[in-house]
Length: 393
Image (tube, rainbow, N blue to C red; front, side, top):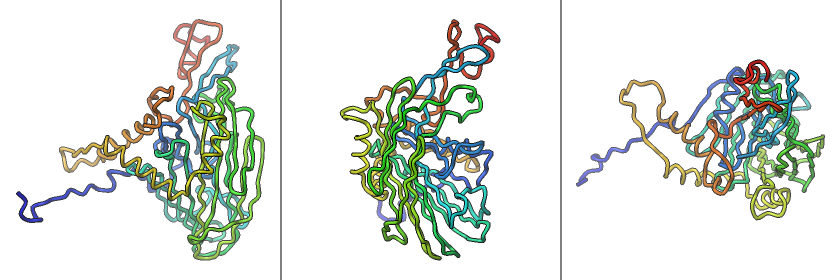
């Protein structure tokens, strides 16, 4: 029997057991970090690339639909090779800014005063905090919060906060749905045809919302996205001047904001994603527009998302204590990281979907290649040396 509160010992677990943290920016490691920081809900997943990042030798933004494959043909060394890929769908996280008409913000082009990136495993949220100084001596703090809703399988959201520490100037924020993406993330696969998305159709729905619809080349899977972008300064909603930018395969809005020293600009972007495979809908474009129209604010969606993750962790949580107290590896965090990615790959949102369970989840490109006209079938790693017909594939 407990007769004194001193008899009760409550074990408080270190926050590090629930967080994957990077305290620096390392271009050589960014590709791995983007995969590790992928957020998903069993229906779709988005890599952890920075909001303003474009595909290059460092970054590779990617959004993948569970079971969203497409097949193309490529001629290699006189042979036609069919490659079936997990398709990279339009980049909805595209959210970037610039000050006084200068170049768009790039973390590699500024003096970084501090940098921290955290994957919050308990809540399913990606956090990024960068304090920096640009070439004009302007010091700023940039914060990001992002999630792919576990509570509402068609929704995702990203929020950027920009604080002007020692400057006042005009800020342009560009919020885009970019369907010009291709499958080119892995060097091994770049010889293959990666243009899976065709027939892009974009539209402005209202002052805050844009939409984009694409179709896969061979599997004829239609995917529609609708994105709503809102802004506030120091907690007060504003209605900035907007300009719509439409290009082939992409639609964006430029928001013009006057930011004074000490003020914080917060831009929130909520996206709805639907496909022609969804059940009980009339058309995926209408379904996406309806979902974004009904979606709440970033804060309300985040609350529902966190509650959904709390429910999952109550069912799947484990506690591990290393036998050696001096063991330096964060075993609880590593175990939870793997469970986190498993729960993002197969979740309650996966029920009823015709999907498998990929070894690495929905974090990047998968390719299966087959040599047309022969009996051989090979993986990309052996495309130049087919086991049945060496040198022919």
